[in-house]
Image (cartoon, rainbow, N blue to C red; front, side):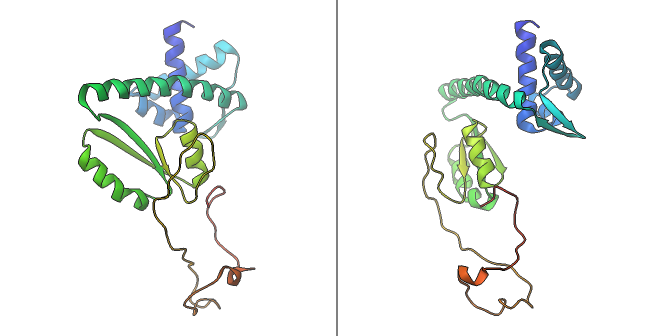
Length: 200
C-alpha cells in the first residue's frame, strides 16, 4: 500500500472509529460509504489485522483497533490543529470548536454569546455522560467538556461554571411524594430508574 493510499485508508479508519459507523464517517469525509468500507477492508487484508468487530450494523473496535486509533488521533488531530491555526492567522478566530456537554441546556447560553462575538467559528456540540465526555477530551475528540463534577486528571484543566439542584421524580402515590424536601438518607433502599453506566 503506497503512502497516499495508506493515508487515505487511515483517515477512513479514524473517522469510522470516531463516528461509530462507516456511513457517518463517509459524511464526515465527504466520500461514498463503499469507499470507506474498501479502505478499511484493504487495511485489514494488507496488514492481516482485524480493526472492528461487526455487531450487525454496529461496529466495535478490536483491541488492535483501539491501539491504532491512539496513533491516528495524534496524527490527524495535529493536522486539524494546523488547519485551524492557519485559518485563524488568515481571518482571526476562524475554525472549529467542538464541545461535549452532559446536556445542551448547560452550554447553549454560553454558546449564544460566543457565536455572537465570533460568528466565523464553526461550533459543534455533542451530548453524553461525564465519563464519555472526559474520554473524548483526553482523546482529542473535542476542545471543551462540560461535566457534572470536577475531573482530577493531570492533562485536564477544570473550572466551576454553575450549580444545579438535584431533583427526584416519582409516582404521586409514593410514600416520599408528599414531602417538600428530602435528605439523601431518605433515599436509602429506594428503587431507581438510572441512566447508563458512566453517568454521574
